[in-house]
Length: 225
Image (cartoon, rainbow, N blue to C red; front, side, top):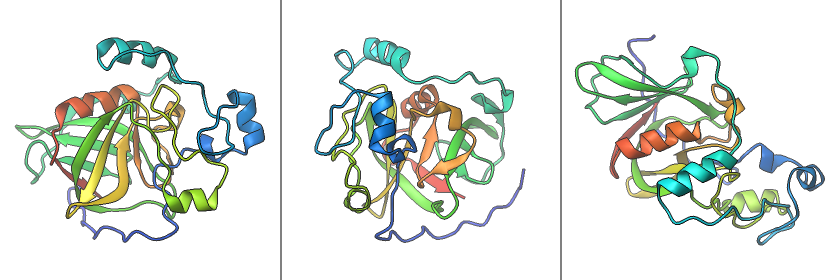
């Protein structure tokens, strides 16, 4: 593991930004129709029907996780674990090492919780320092205007649930109080964890996103290398 990593300035946002784009949402409507029944919200793309209603809480998490896409993880390197990780950052800081496709939550005594993640594909990755501006459980997905202009068949909003591209939890990242449009969030494509596939957001296994969500408060420093 590299002991020294150079921190780059946060890449400026452009009109082509398509953060948090799911590859499944990139499929043509004809292919999506084979996966889910038509039920568009503000668009023509078929989207999943609403999941069974449960009030926020452990029961909803338990039941919706049963409905969410799952992937068997056989590689021990892709399992959440505590490791030795000396760092100059204070405990509680989140470090995303995009080259490693790992996220580290700095702990005391030279330790860190290590999580496997998916990162931005070529041309979509970013780096810099931000803070957790807000946190949501099973958040809705609201594609930005630039994405809707590029793909008008996308729904304007997709309600949170087990098949939502944002997954079970999301940490919204801001820089100097301004939304970066980048998130750390769960995924409905767990088989892609450990790959460079997203449009810039950091994807986690839903269970890992829930674990991180419970450990970090609003205002947490996030360093993306």
